[in-house]
Length: 202
Figure 1 (cartoon, rainbow, N blue to C red):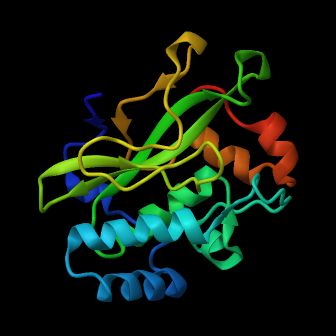
Figure 2: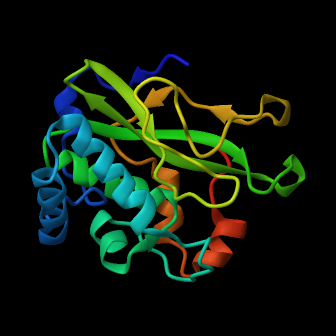
């Protein structure tokens, strides 16, 4: 799939926002640590991706009722759903001057369409060293989910099943989607939100 950018200005993908709060000391600390341990841009992006994927639990997977939204919240509590985890990965990358944005998919909530649809969030990242945008999904791996860092063939958490009318949106957005952020801010129980309160379209 050919990706398109909401903005042609890379600086728009470096801005700090309320959700992508990379000025927070905790974000600065872990981003700097990962950066200092990396030999180059690609290695840092891979390390940041794997840190969020593997060290920040997906709240549904651990059946947690806690809701996190801002990047610093997801880092502090070490959990969040895909919306919060994409905020965190974006913050870690932008903190080191790596342009990063937000991408979305429309997936079935369960295995089949009768379970309803939800919007799933992942990240678009621009690698200056190869002049290319790639997508990364730091949702967190589990049985049946195996997202990996890849410069060539995408290895996302969820392949799109067109027969089920799932959608892969091609746009890389500058900021988190308003509907996904609102779902986090207006809910008080993550499990109930995950089952009944997530947006089904952009």
